Length: 112
Image 1: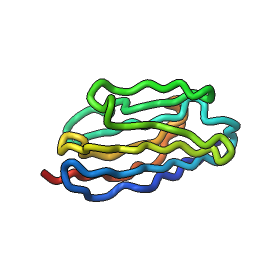
Image 2: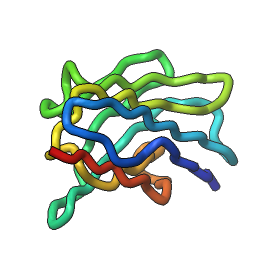
Image 3: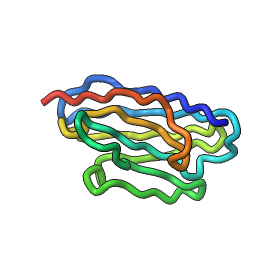
């Protein structure tokens, strides 16, 4: 079993920044396959970014050059630095491990 705890969401103005954190505990031994999804009101959940234990990353086209995912292997924690936020980034952000285990989500609201 894996337990994920997210933090760092909130309300921010358009153009601002937020940093999300996700700490994993339980039967997890690396950050491989950890990532972030988001779900906007009335829309399907979509991939935002994910990372491998070697540091390889991939991003949704809509967040490239604005968001950065990183990880701390010693803490089994991943971060999502979100810059130049737009209103369309509003949604609930979920941390996941290989799309098997999910956190409860943290709300990000970007006001225009």
